[in-house]
Structures are given as structure tokens and as C-alpha cells.
Length: 293
Image (cartoon, rainbow, N blue to C red; front, side):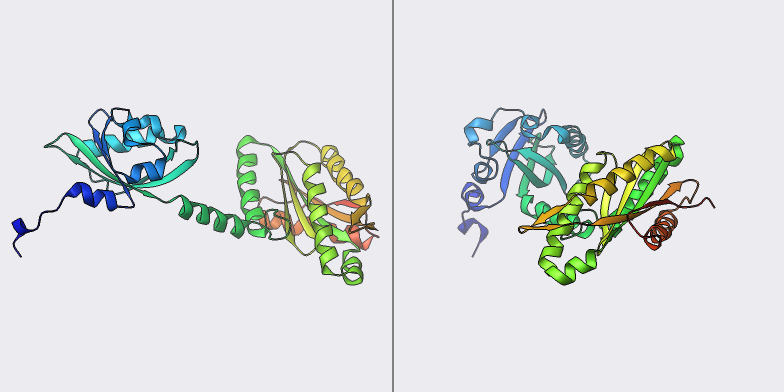
């Protein structure tokens, strides 16, 4: 079959495409959008033709979008790029673009692929990798990462930092006597109380089992750290109501301070852990500071 025997209406092809096709002039104004544009962004073609493209881009992405557009117009290869757009209903859409500049027609042709669901799944996987399934607190991996970041900042700003290693006294007896379901709910309640005891700039996470870690930023004196630790002990000593039953627990807390007790994440965590065991060995329900090196 000869080419001229096969008449293809490109408009019909674009009507069938799931991805949106857009044509924009040098100044960034829409001159054409395909039918899929409405499905993806909620706007009918008549609502965007003649309008500035950047008006529909998510505010935080406008600057980088403009920079990418300029590189495309300049003839530089920019096969794909991502940004966020705002739908007519206000929802944010993550978009993967393929774009080319036509010097002959002085137009930019771009194809938009909706990757919002993919981004959502990536965020969920990233969250799951750094958080404890039960309490939703940062897990050991994320805790160490945040501690490293906090230490870097503390070193640069010449500030103090403290690590609190918290172990729940008597938790095993509750878990064994009332079952893991009750134990899990108790851990969730403990996590909530710990979170309420610290500032938003600090971090609380679960290392595993009944062990938690708190990172206190910008600590200036041992007294100020002790006040927070004693507050945690007092809050955790208050009765917990789980499925109609009242539970009484206590906590042993070991504290390591930067830079006196170490300058590396694991070093500080291990030192705080040793201090916590001293608290537990002395009967529990105590706060013990690590000795200076």
C-alpha cells in the first residue's frame, strides 16, 4: 500500500491518546490541547487556549519549569522532565513531559503523561522504608539518618544535642499476660505520649520491641535535658487504658550528649543504651546520664 493511499487524520489519532498533547507558542501560551488534556487536568480546551501555560503549573514548580522551557527553546536536548500541575478541582497532578521545539513553526509540542499514582506509590514505599509499621514512628534506619543530620547541624552551629534511649520496664509481662494485641496497642499509646513530650524540631522513633529513641536538638544544659527525661518518665507512669483494662508501666532512660559522649550516631546510641541498662539495673523507673569519656 502506498503512503498516499493511507490518509491519517492526526487529530483523530490524538483523540484516542490517553496522554495529553499540547502545543504552546514561544511566549508560553496554549494554541492547542488534545481531548486527553481535559481528562488529565479537568479543563476544556476552550478554557486554556490563549492562556499562559505557567498559570496552571504548581507554584513551587514554576521556576524550574520556566528554566526547562528555556533550554528546550534554545535547542538543548531535554527529552523528559517532571513537574506538578493544578487541576481545575484543585488537585495536584504529577506530570512526566516529553517536549520538542519546532524552529520552523516557532511552537513547542509536548506530551503529558500522568504519573501521580506512580509518585504516590513511591512515597508510600519510601515512607514504609523509614517508619515502624506499628507506631508509625521513624524506625532505626531513619532515626540514625536524622541523628546524623542533627549532628552535622550541631557541629556547624556549635550547639549541643542529646540522645535518650528509652526502655519500657515490665512490658514483657504485659505482652505475655494479656496478649500481643494488647501489647501492640500499648506500644502505640506509648508512642503517642512520647511524641507529645517533645518539640516538633526533635525526633522520637522506635528502635524495636519496647525500645524507643529520642533526639533532642539544641540542648544547652544537662538540667534542661533532665527535665524532658523526667517528664517522659512521669507521662509513661500514668495509667494506660487498653480495651477496658488499666496498665501501669515505668521506663528506664539512658542519656548521651554531644559532644561529651561521642560525635557519631552509633556511638551516641550505644552510649545511651549502656546508660539505660544502668538505670534498669538500679531498679528501673530512672534517668541515668552517661559518664564523660
